[in-house]
Length: 467
Image (cartoon, rainbow, N blue to C red; front, side):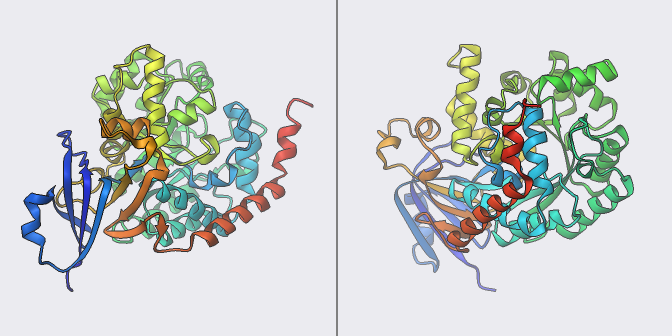
């Protein structure tokens, strides 16, 4: 088969390769689905001048790795903005569960495509999901088929809730039979892991320490070890969780999970806000990873994760947008800025976190946190060709005295002009090239309205506190 070459020239190239390299007038050469060369244009042009391939030149473009969101709930795109002034428990019980239980496989398919469209349009080329609604066992197949059809890279995570922590939660939300959990987890891995040229991976999740019994947590982690896939949990997100675990087990959340043997380098700890200094040391010793979701944590008033301490202890921290329902968008540029500003104001220290730190968290560190750093997260020879081109010639992105700082503090997802995933252009000149955006948006909006009405979610919220 004849090799397919693409040559992308930009005013700047930001490889995110660990050396803090910044290339002016750079060229990235893609062969099929991988990067085969990168460097200054004048140093490489003689080598490639006469080669056949597609040339793309961006006079004011910055080429960088695609952003990696290491935590989201794809299906929650339909719940955007609903119940945004509720605390975590009330929001989950009165918005998330009722709407999710009204969904079928085809609804998950439509709304996940809707979400991924926003991800791609704002420069995200890879994600780690959390899908924990299995009242129909084929719901997760709707998620997987949507990721496949959108040519997206992502980790589909089959999450499980085995107990209901609140009597208001419908019984159908819990998957209580461990035999079903094991069989469906293995089916999902065998059916989807490393499919679509490696674009789709599968992970497993015990939703949280109070949503799952000890047997389920251990069983899911054991399957991850058996099939060499990633394991994740929502951990210490709200202070109520820390109180529950301490009252039940007389130890912190991380200590409890470590006692169960599920804190390791294959583990992603999502949120991880309410932890003690000794637990931070424990996470570092076990080489576990953290998903930081600053916008979601602020919207739900959950608290501020000790990210500077994590980084100081060598813990890998990636950035996530969380579900659109607790963020209101999937824009990783906004998440990067929020991350830096949140920790600066929390510490009253403008030097505690820099723009480049957030860029690392959103690219190579996020990739590392989900076990994908050998393939994506930076622009390096041999890695997958997942990249974006950001336009820098707008008034809000200039003057170009410090392009990297402007990228984080001045930019937003709408500055992304071109997106490449697995060597294929999926958006160019802000036009989608592989699917019809209008149809996806229409079906997503229709789906959301249908489900909201079916779940009677607005009346549920309005009646809170009246009874």
